[in-house]
Length: 107
Image (tube, rainbow, N blue to C red; front, side, top):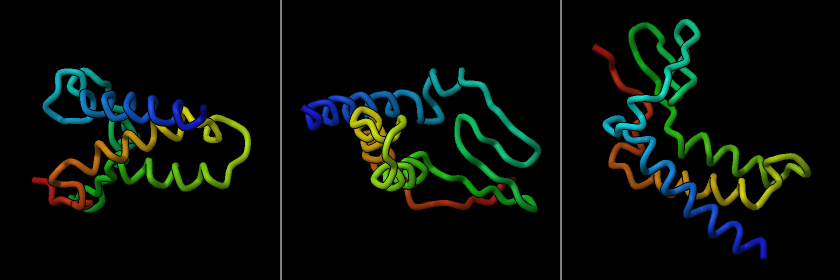
């Protein structure tokens, strides 16, 4: 039964990030930006250092969380629904052509 939950939540995670993560999507444009000085933590993680922007894609962050969830017992990361949602976000993020670019020069 856990695999069914993981599969369905993977589809939900994929679709959620398909409609919310692209910078040109209507939903993404309406999301608030949360910044603390040179660090933006929402809707994406970006760190500005000396005019350069280091952007952490959601698939990268979700891969780290997915690996951590293997060793965590109890809590929200131990749920198959959460793991499936993270896996769907990873799959969706890897579909972008700029998935391997972590650093861009800002102008």
